[in-house]
Image (tube, rainbow, N blue to C red; front, side):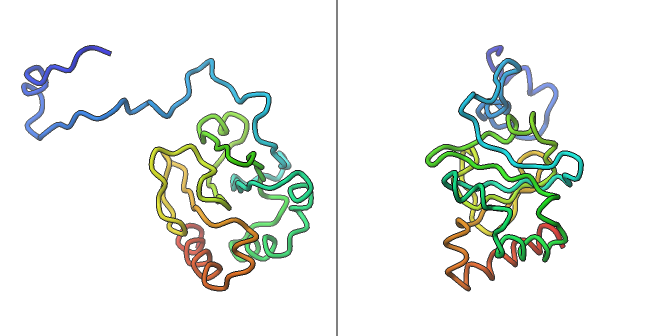
Length: 165
């Protein structure tokens, strides 16, 4: 990128300009792809409505996710069914770049059951939705933590209402 020259921009802008890091720093390069060890994705392309749910579970638990009663109730409350949703299982300790994941899924919104599953520069507060580009995102605790805590369930419900209802 060319060197920043404040005198040049003074001719075009009357407002104060701030120099920040490269705005495209978190966008993958065209040749960058999901690695072979990328996240496991479960979805039905024919009925997918754009909601992507991120989890970090072991293989056995993830294979049973479609039978999770708590998750079924959450989805029904926001007018989704289990078959309308894509589930992405992210390896423990890893995270995923939403732009890279968007190459495989037509993502419209994201609910992350784990606050550190997305590759973000700064982690926003849990249970308050925000946007990554045009995509609304809601971060939450893991499913097992939510099932055990009524206060966290209420916070999740409030966040989901703000995002979907």
